[in-house]
Amino acid sequence: MTSILNADLHCHSVVSDGTLTPEALAERAKAHGVDLWALTDHDEIGGVQRAAAAARVIGLHYLTGVEISVSFLGQTIHIVGLGFDPNNATLQTGLVRTRGGRGQRAKDMSDSLAKIGIHGAYEGALKFAGNQELISRTHFARFLVETGACKDTYEVFRKYLTEGKPGFVEHRWATLKDAVTWINGAGGIAVIAHPARYKFTANEEFALFTEFKGHGGQGVEVVTGSHSAAEYLVYADIAREYGLAASRGSDFHSPGESHTELGTLPCLPGKLTPVWELLTERIQYA
Image (cartoon, rainbow, N blue to C red; front, top):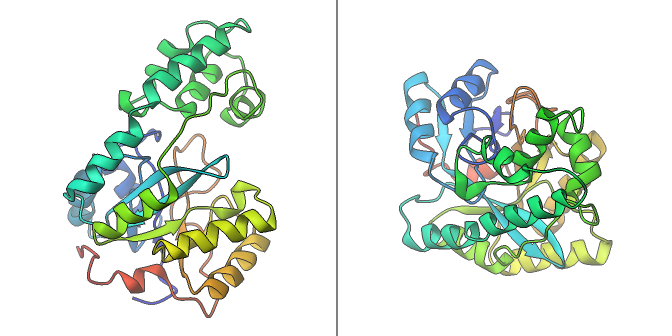
Protein backbone atom coordinates (compact mmCIF):
# COMPACT_ATOMS: atom_id res chain seq x y z
CA MET A 1 0.00 0.00 0.00
CA THR A 2 1.30 3.45 -0.92
CA SER A 3 1.56 6.78 0.87
CA ILE A 4 -1.24 8.22 -1.33
CA LEU A 5 -3.73 5.69 -0.04
CA ASN A 6 -6.97 7.27 1.18
CA ALA A 7 -6.65 5.93 4.72
CA ASP A 8 -8.93 7.20 7.49
CA LEU A 9 -7.67 5.76 10.76
CA HIS A 10 -9.53 7.81 13.35
CA CYS A 11 -13.30 7.97 13.82
CA HIS A 12 -15.97 7.19 16.42
CA SER A 13 -19.23 5.25 16.53
CA VAL A 14 -22.21 5.12 18.86
CA VAL A 15 -20.20 2.57 20.88
CA SER A 16 -18.37 5.61 22.34
CA ASP A 17 -19.31 9.21 21.50
CA GLY A 18 -20.23 9.08 17.81
CA THR A 19 -23.80 9.03 16.51
CA LEU A 20 -23.53 6.34 13.80
CA THR A 21 -23.24 2.58 14.18
CA PRO A 22 -20.01 0.84 13.15
CA GLU A 23 -21.88 -0.52 10.12
CA ALA A 24 -23.09 2.93 9.04
CA LEU A 25 -19.59 4.35 9.46
CA ALA A 26 -18.12 1.63 7.26
CA GLU A 27 -20.65 2.45 4.55
CA ARG A 28 -19.99 6.18 4.89
CA ALA A 29 -16.23 5.65 4.66
CA LYS A 30 -16.65 3.54 1.53
CA ALA A 31 -18.97 6.13 -0.04
CA HIS A 32 -16.35 8.85 0.51
CA GLY A 33 -13.57 6.91 -1.18
CA VAL A 34 -11.76 5.52 1.86
CA ASP A 35 -9.45 2.61 0.96
CA LEU A 36 -8.30 1.67 4.48
CA TRP A 37 -10.40 2.37 7.57
CA ALA A 38 -10.18 2.00 11.34
CA LEU A 39 -12.86 2.54 13.96
CA THR A 40 -11.18 4.11 17.02
CA ASP A 41 -13.77 4.42 19.77
CA HIS A 42 -12.73 5.96 23.08
CA ASP A 43 -11.35 3.38 25.53
CA GLU A 44 -13.59 0.72 24.01
CA ILE A 45 -13.14 -2.05 21.44
CA GLY A 46 -16.69 -3.39 21.61
CA GLY A 47 -17.39 -2.24 18.05
CA VAL A 48 -14.29 -3.53 16.27
CA GLN A 49 -15.70 -6.92 15.26
CA ARG A 50 -18.87 -5.31 13.89
CA ALA A 51 -16.77 -2.78 12.00
CA ALA A 52 -14.53 -5.50 10.56
CA ALA A 53 -17.51 -7.57 9.43
CA ALA A 54 -19.19 -4.55 7.82
CA ALA A 55 -15.97 -3.53 6.05
CA ARG A 56 -15.52 -7.05 4.70
CA VAL A 57 -19.03 -7.10 3.22
CA ILE A 58 -18.61 -3.82 1.32
CA GLY A 59 -15.02 -4.36 0.17
CA LEU A 60 -13.20 -1.97 2.53
CA HIS A 61 -9.75 -2.75 3.94
CA TYR A 62 -9.74 -2.53 7.74
CA LEU A 63 -7.48 -2.15 10.78
CA THR A 64 -8.53 -2.65 14.38
CA GLY A 65 -8.44 0.60 16.33
CA VAL A 66 -9.00 2.32 19.68
CA GLU A 67 -8.35 5.78 21.16
CA ILE A 68 -7.06 5.59 24.74
CA SER A 69 -7.45 8.51 27.16
CA VAL A 70 -4.17 9.37 28.91
CA SER A 71 -3.26 11.84 31.66
CA PHE A 72 0.03 13.58 30.86
CA LEU A 73 1.46 16.75 32.46
CA GLY A 74 -1.92 17.78 33.77
CA GLN A 75 -3.72 17.37 30.45
CA THR A 76 -5.81 14.65 28.86
CA ILE A 77 -4.21 13.44 25.66
CA HIS A 78 -5.18 10.61 23.35
CA ILE A 79 -3.20 7.67 22.03
CA VAL A 80 -4.61 5.76 19.07
CA GLY A 81 -3.86 2.06 18.81
CA LEU A 82 -3.94 0.41 15.38
CA GLY A 83 -3.63 -3.15 14.16
CA PHE A 84 -3.78 -4.88 17.55
CA ASP A 85 -5.35 -8.19 18.56
CA PRO A 86 -8.72 -7.24 20.14
CA ASN A 87 -8.75 -10.49 22.11
CA ASN A 88 -5.62 -9.55 24.06
CA ALA A 89 -6.55 -9.88 27.74
CA THR A 90 -4.18 -7.20 29.05
CA LEU A 91 -5.50 -4.61 26.60
CA GLN A 92 -9.10 -5.51 27.44
CA THR A 93 -8.46 -5.24 31.19
CA GLY A 94 -6.66 -1.93 30.82
CA LEU A 95 -9.52 -0.42 28.83
CA VAL A 96 -12.08 -1.57 31.39
CA ARG A 97 -10.03 0.12 34.10
CA THR A 98 -9.73 3.32 32.07
CA ARG A 99 -13.47 3.44 31.46
CA GLY A 100 -14.26 2.79 35.11
CA GLY A 101 -14.26 6.36 36.39
CA ARG A 102 -16.50 7.87 33.74
CA GLY A 103 -19.78 7.23 35.57
CA GLN A 104 -18.87 9.11 38.73
CA ARG A 105 -17.23 11.86 36.72
CA ALA A 106 -20.47 12.30 34.75
CA LYS A 107 -22.51 12.60 37.95
CA ASP A 108 -20.05 15.17 39.30
CA MET A 109 -20.36 17.14 36.05
CA SER A 110 -24.14 17.09 36.38
CA ASP A 111 -23.93 18.32 39.98
CA SER A 112 -21.63 21.12 38.89
CA LEU A 113 -24.01 22.21 36.13
CA ALA A 114 -26.97 22.09 38.51
CA LYS A 115 -25.24 24.72 40.67
CA ILE A 116 -25.57 27.20 37.79
CA GLY A 117 -29.19 26.29 37.06
CA ILE A 118 -28.80 23.51 34.48
CA HIS A 119 -30.68 20.57 35.97
CA GLY A 120 -31.07 16.96 34.82
CA ALA A 121 -27.86 16.99 32.80
CA TYR A 122 -26.79 13.47 33.77
CA GLU A 123 -30.10 11.91 32.73
CA GLY A 124 -30.17 14.08 29.62
CA ALA A 125 -26.65 13.13 28.59
CA LEU A 126 -27.39 9.47 29.22
CA LYS A 127 -30.03 9.53 26.47
CA PHE A 128 -27.28 10.23 23.95
CA ALA A 129 -24.86 7.59 25.23
CA GLY A 130 -25.04 4.36 23.28
CA ASN A 131 -22.75 2.82 25.89
CA GLN A 132 -23.45 3.96 29.46
CA GLU A 133 -19.89 3.07 30.51
CA LEU A 134 -18.60 5.67 28.07
CA ILE A 135 -20.77 8.65 28.96
CA SER A 136 -18.65 11.69 28.14
CA ARG A 137 -18.55 15.44 27.75
CA THR A 138 -19.80 15.05 24.17
CA HIS A 139 -23.02 13.48 25.42
CA PHE A 140 -23.50 16.39 27.85
CA ALA A 141 -22.86 18.79 24.98
CA ARG A 142 -25.58 17.19 22.87
CA PHE A 143 -28.03 17.47 25.76
CA LEU A 144 -27.26 21.18 26.23
CA VAL A 145 -27.79 21.80 22.51
CA GLU A 146 -31.09 19.90 22.66
CA THR A 147 -32.29 22.06 25.56
CA GLY A 148 -31.34 25.27 23.75
CA ALA A 149 -28.64 26.26 26.26
CA CYS A 150 -26.18 26.56 23.34
CA LYS A 151 -26.51 26.62 19.58
CA ASP A 152 -23.98 23.85 18.92
CA THR A 153 -21.59 21.50 20.72
CA TYR A 154 -18.61 23.78 20.11
CA GLU A 155 -20.31 26.57 22.07
CA VAL A 156 -21.09 24.11 24.88
CA PHE A 157 -17.44 23.15 25.25
CA ARG A 158 -16.32 26.79 25.23
CA LYS A 159 -18.85 27.85 27.89
CA TYR A 160 -19.18 24.82 30.13
CA LEU A 161 -16.99 21.79 29.54
CA THR A 162 -13.34 22.89 29.40
CA GLU A 163 -10.99 23.45 32.31
CA GLY A 164 -12.08 26.32 34.52
CA LYS A 165 -15.68 26.23 33.27
CA PRO A 166 -18.64 25.21 35.47
CA GLY A 167 -19.24 21.74 34.00
CA PHE A 168 -15.62 20.55 33.80
CA VAL A 169 -14.51 17.72 36.07
CA GLU A 170 -11.00 16.33 35.74
CA HIS A 171 -10.57 12.57 35.52
CA ARG A 172 -7.43 10.49 35.96
CA TRP A 173 -6.97 8.32 32.90
CA ALA A 174 -4.32 5.75 31.91
CA THR A 175 -0.65 6.72 31.94
CA LEU A 176 1.26 7.17 28.71
CA LYS A 177 3.28 4.07 29.54
CA ASP A 178 0.08 2.08 30.15
CA ALA A 179 -1.47 2.98 26.82
CA VAL A 180 1.62 2.33 24.70
CA THR A 181 2.42 -0.90 26.54
CA TRP A 182 -1.12 -2.27 26.14
CA ILE A 183 -1.14 -1.52 22.42
CA ASN A 184 2.33 -2.92 21.77
CA GLY A 185 1.61 -6.00 23.87
CA ALA A 186 -1.43 -6.71 21.70
CA GLY A 187 0.69 -6.56 18.54
CA GLY A 188 -0.40 -3.09 17.46
CA ILE A 189 1.19 0.31 16.91
CA ALA A 190 0.67 3.31 19.19
CA VAL A 191 0.06 6.73 17.61
CA ILE A 192 -0.13 10.17 19.25
CA ALA A 193 -3.52 11.56 18.22
CA HIS A 194 -3.94 15.17 16.97
CA PRO A 195 -0.90 16.59 18.85
CA ALA A 196 -1.61 20.23 17.95
CA ARG A 197 -4.74 20.15 20.11
CA TYR A 198 -2.85 19.89 23.37
CA LYS A 199 -1.29 23.37 23.45
CA PHE A 200 1.82 22.15 25.22
CA THR A 201 4.84 24.39 25.57
CA ALA A 202 7.85 23.43 23.48
CA ASN A 203 9.45 21.71 26.47
CA GLU A 204 6.25 19.84 27.35
CA GLU A 205 5.82 18.66 23.78
CA PHE A 206 9.44 17.50 23.75
CA ALA A 207 8.71 15.53 26.92
CA LEU A 208 5.61 13.96 25.33
CA PHE A 209 7.37 12.79 22.19
CA THR A 210 10.50 11.69 24.01
CA GLU A 211 8.62 9.66 26.61
CA PHE A 212 6.25 8.24 23.99
CA LYS A 213 9.16 7.08 21.85
CA GLY A 214 10.93 5.71 24.94
CA HIS A 215 7.93 3.52 25.79
CA GLY A 216 7.87 2.10 22.25
CA GLY A 217 5.44 4.44 20.51
CA GLN A 218 5.86 4.42 16.74
CA GLY A 219 3.47 6.89 15.14
CA VAL A 220 1.91 10.36 15.17
CA GLU A 221 -1.16 11.78 13.46
CA VAL A 222 0.10 14.31 10.96
CA VAL A 223 -2.97 14.90 8.80
CA THR A 224 -6.09 15.04 10.96
CA GLY A 225 -9.36 16.92 11.16
CA SER A 226 -7.96 18.74 14.22
CA HIS A 227 -4.93 20.20 12.38
CA SER A 228 -4.59 23.14 10.05
CA ALA A 229 -2.64 22.89 6.80
CA ALA A 230 0.30 24.61 8.50
CA GLU A 231 0.18 22.09 11.35
CA TYR A 232 0.35 19.21 8.86
CA LEU A 233 3.82 20.48 7.95
CA VAL A 234 4.86 21.09 11.56
CA TYR A 235 4.04 17.54 12.60
CA ALA A 236 5.46 16.07 9.41
CA ASP A 237 8.78 17.62 10.48
CA ILE A 238 8.32 16.27 14.01
CA ALA A 239 7.56 12.79 12.66
CA ARG A 240 10.83 12.88 10.73
CA GLU A 241 12.74 14.29 13.70
CA TYR A 242 11.62 11.50 16.04
CA GLY A 243 11.61 8.74 13.45
CA LEU A 244 7.86 8.18 13.75
CA ALA A 245 5.46 6.84 11.16
CA ALA A 246 2.73 9.23 10.03
CA SER A 247 -0.98 8.57 10.42
CA ARG A 248 -4.05 10.20 8.91
CA GLY A 249 -7.61 10.38 10.25
CA SER A 250 -10.65 12.63 10.19
CA ASP A 251 -11.68 12.18 13.86
CA PHE A 252 -15.23 11.97 12.52
CA HIS A 253 -18.01 11.73 15.13
CA SER A 254 -21.28 12.75 13.53
CA PRO A 255 -22.71 14.08 10.24
CA GLY A 256 -24.22 17.02 12.10
CA GLU A 257 -21.21 17.93 14.21
CA SER A 258 -17.90 17.04 12.59
CA HIS A 259 -16.05 19.65 10.54
CA THR A 260 -14.16 16.98 8.60
CA GLU A 261 -15.92 14.25 6.67
CA LEU A 262 -14.56 10.71 6.48
CA GLY A 263 -12.05 10.30 3.67
CA THR A 264 -11.77 13.98 2.73
CA LEU A 265 -8.37 14.86 4.18
CA PRO A 266 -5.40 15.67 1.91
CA CYS A 267 -2.60 13.17 1.42
CA LEU A 268 0.29 12.91 3.85
CA PRO A 269 3.16 15.28 3.09
CA GLY A 270 6.07 13.69 1.26
CA LYS A 271 9.04 11.77 2.65
CA LEU A 272 7.13 10.22 5.53
CA THR A 273 6.58 6.57 6.40
CA PRO A 274 2.81 5.95 6.45
CA VAL A 275 1.82 4.02 9.55
CA TRP A 276 -0.08 1.46 7.47
CA GLU A 277 3.19 0.39 5.83
CA LEU A 278 4.20 -0.93 9.27
CA LEU A 279 0.91 -2.80 9.58
CA THR A 280 0.53 -4.63 6.28
CA GLU A 281 0.30 -8.00 8.02
CA ARG A 282 -2.46 -6.67 10.29
CA ILE A 283 -4.70 -5.23 7.58
CA GLN A 284 -7.92 -7.19 7.13
CA TYR A 285 -8.47 -7.32 3.39
CA ALA A 286 -11.92 -7.36 1.87
